[in-house]
Amino acid sequence: QGTVEIEPGSYQLVVSHGPRYSAFTQNGTITAGSSTSVNAQITRVINTPGFIAGDFHVHSINSPDCEVTQAERVATMLADGIDLFTPSDHDFRSDFQPTIDAMGVGDLISIAQSAEITTFDYGHFNSWPVTVDPSAVNGGGVDFGRAGIAPGMDFPSLGSYSLSPAEIQKLEAGMRNNKASE
Figure 1 (cartoon, one colour):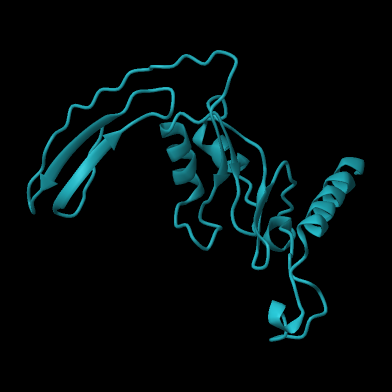
Figure 2: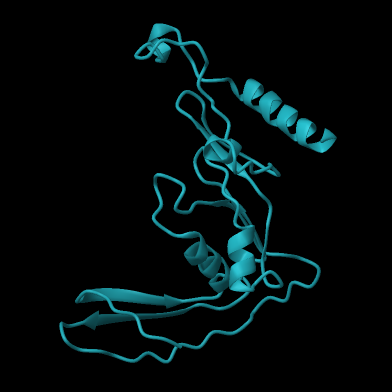
């Protein structure tokens, strides 16, 4: 139950609670200065005892392509009926646990710390579980660029490539092994 302010226009309203529930849809037009009420009802249609619903590619405010705060992202995950998600901001390791704790929803949702490594030469790679290091640049995110390349010379056409997928995997595995031995 709630109120949402939107610009005048024609819309399709969709109300859902994730893949285990039905979805309600309704088309409508909103005119300036008016309001309308919708009585949307959804029903659980799939029981999933022993299973979880997860989202393994989730961006938030620490990604350059997302404006959603951590609290807003946790709220959207809960609204979508997600039990576990992996925060995968581009080249930034985000720790959502303090937000989940502050919201008091730790009994409703869990995270596996993750990272999206966004190379320009080979595409995007998601990795989990990872460790977030708040004292490190970008929470300890992988620097996929090749060290020692002069500024302006870091282009494939000049013979300079990002770390390869195998090098990234080896680096991530080494970081996990170092944390496990501490």
